[in-house]
Image (tube, rainbow, N blue to C red; front, side, top):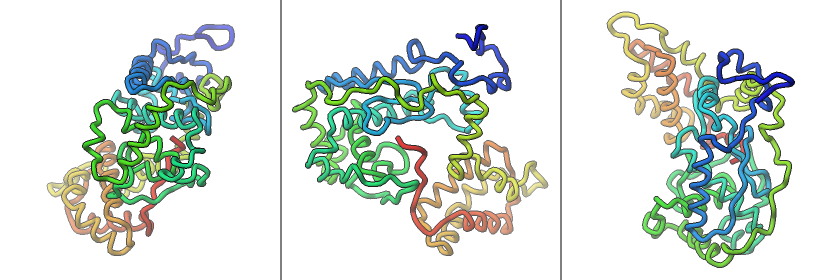
Length: 341
């Protein structure tokens, strides 16, 4: 690997030095990376299910399938353990950072790629089951947590965000060899969608795709001229309140940086012990769904632990938490979409 005329062993650089390098200069590739065996595994699953199609994969800035292009973009940080650690340090999470979650996302993206490669979204039966592919994507979506019309795969009931995502999520459940979907979804309306995919693959799985992947995929890491530092600054800004550390400053105002007196306890413990009381009060005054409010409390617990925050176990602290959540909570059950998967 080299930048300009001189090769650089960036693995030996400090984090501060590494963050000043351009992403395109990291020389990243899928071959011989931790991603290679996982991609081979999902290809084997496609073969075992009778699918001729093998979507190409490339390193991008996030998980994605470009619109109507049968190619899978994978976050470049997953190609190297050092970059995964940088991602975690900067973003407090790594999407697809472990084997299980990476396979879930690969199967999901395979669903998009399969849809685009065979133009399934133009079929009448596809539209009858999943809806209109041309339906507009929104920055947020409403969902019904207990609906049986959709499979459950990725977090936040992602199948309900758009017909294209519904198909990709259904495909992922169908493809997973460890998921006994015929038993799990028996009696659910969603079984019609799973059976449709099963029947469709048996009829067209051996055929070559109708659409080939382009030679110049968008948002490729090989062309990203941003430094890692600039990339993460922009990523945090774009995520807004969906950034895991977004509420850190507010939590630091509500809780204590250090224990003070005998009545001080871990902030995460206080949140766990009083979450029902907190959620009930916030739901009462905002009309927000308790399901979403419990998720927000869970997020507070994770960040409070990460920040090692403490709290006085008194009513004033509970009131402060309720006030913070009331200020944050809206009146609907909409959740932000983190990019397009």
